[in-house]
Image (cartoon, helix red, strand yellow):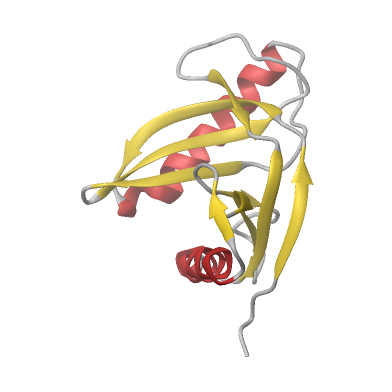
Length: 151
């Protein structure tokens, strides 16, 4: 039996404040830590607040990742330094909750992609992961969302 379940949800599009970059696998943790601090500073400077947990959206680019990481926000952020405005899409999404080491979250992506295919859904954009707990938690929770529609 899989440790994963899929929940179909309807999401509203959400403005975000993000930093985009290319990151080697060994640099991910340091990159995210600096990005989340930088985005929080920009939000504070602009009298905005996070409207949810931090997130990351990843694509393979050779041996590295193209990443977009930051926070959903209460309003549109004005670009500041590396921080720029973005958006998480609205619509149907399949959600998979991963519990445990961040390095093993790939299994949740595999499960979600297989579930979409086996249940008659097609992806409608890149998935993203939201970090519900910090790295200090023994078994942190990571929510992976797959924008999708019925095939």
